[in-house]
Length: 148
Picture 1: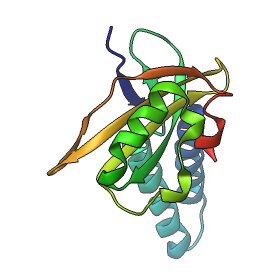
Picture 2: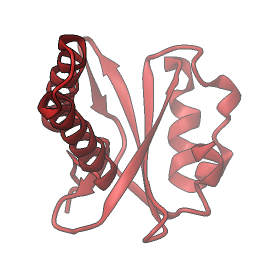
Picture 3: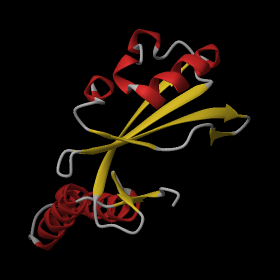
Picture 4: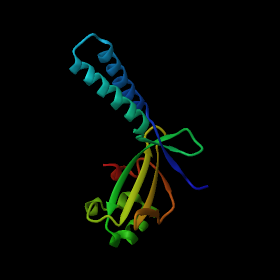
């Protein structure tokens, strides 16, 4: 079964949007000056936009588990060493080479609640990143060095 992660709203996303909406409505409802009403409308607008757009958590298809995502970018010349490292021991990935190119992207989806982590390597093909490895499942303690 192929793992598929989709972006979803976290509780923090919903709370942030709700707080902005409520503050905006309160500022508009109060009999105050026009400048305070403008700020209130701005908060309402911002809360609505954030509610529609903000999705900071990832959900594994077919489960109710939510994950956070960490990305690292590497030069294309590191493909073989990265592929070998994530297949055997992701703790061996040399993060000192990170951000010295953007031909490869290493995604780590992790959940402290379940203690699971999924690691996958992507290669940049013009205009998008294509997977060049399967998802590898590890315990979160084994990929701890990648989450720093």
